[in-house]
Length: 477
Image 1: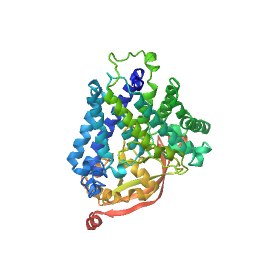
Image 2: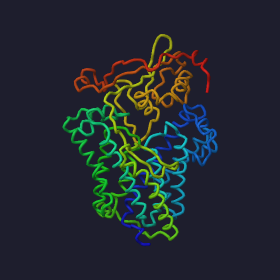
Image 3: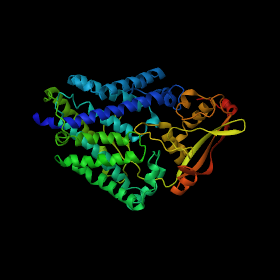
Image 4: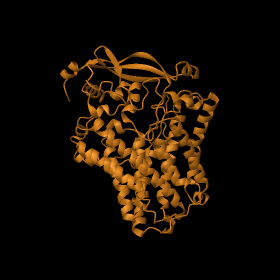
């Protein structure tokens, strides 16, 4: 079955594996650092309550069988260490069985986290990482020629990511069709980065060109992926460049990074290696027959599971970022079908004595003079959920009361999710949350204010002041 192997794609596999390993490192470190406060035994959405009465076959996760904060941290740091080993090439230096086992453990550990992560792990890039990680199991070590079937499945994944995102836009907000969405998006996106202010102030004519180019990249270019090289590589290169542009303009966790990583599996084909002057590995051989049989079986399973995502692409009721199976093997993707035109922010404040002091978060806007930070490809889950809560309080109704309680207790794990604790010596007497309209300052306003990035106006109250006494009398879960 010589047709199954593509020795010339060794560089694409190498770039893909190293890039994916880096994302895994970030994902597991984020789980270790944020998980106990968000999902632990005293977390905002405790895993023990979520898994109570659930069976492993209904919710595949180690934590369905047993949960403790110590086990969560152990799993997270074990995953980070194994991903670091993959990043430096240890996993893929050995025989095929070692490579498969290493990538399988990474996928299984992260699946265990995502499946109990509830709202904190309800983002499309979680399924994207799992689907990508599952395919990585079958790419083989560097001593073996890359399997063409898996590379084809990666192209199918990249096609769905890009084409799904393009369709959700063109079917969604009118501003995508009249090319005006970027008039708002850089200002109202969930978490701006250091360059977002500058992107927002680009000329409107350039914004229209950006939107038009995005439509071409997501609606036309993906079809090039199924043509022979170098055409497929050229198409993937356009997508990679577009994703790099998105990385420059905002913080979207590892959504753009994983998409780039998948694109590199196509770009790094037979043409790129000679251009870079990189020599192929000394030992490249075809895989054994038993491995070829596994590849065919996996491709058949993916083909069957792809029916619902494929139907979703052509449906007028296209779902955005949906998973159709418990293992997240084949999913549907898309983002920003509708664009928020006005930015609102929830500002949380505490009172001690007569003074109200704000809590500052690591990523989301608060202090108008603070430049938006670069966070991606890392992911700040609480900050993201607060952006959604500003759109609709329903996004926070399950975890917000516990969050307020933890602030009133000066709970250390919860406070580590924040950038500052304005009450380091004593807990606050009351907590409140107010609603502000935020907009970027104009260049003239920035100059006049000595460098303020934002202008804000008070809109109203998100939550009336809550005292420690009131929380003490509230029934506990």
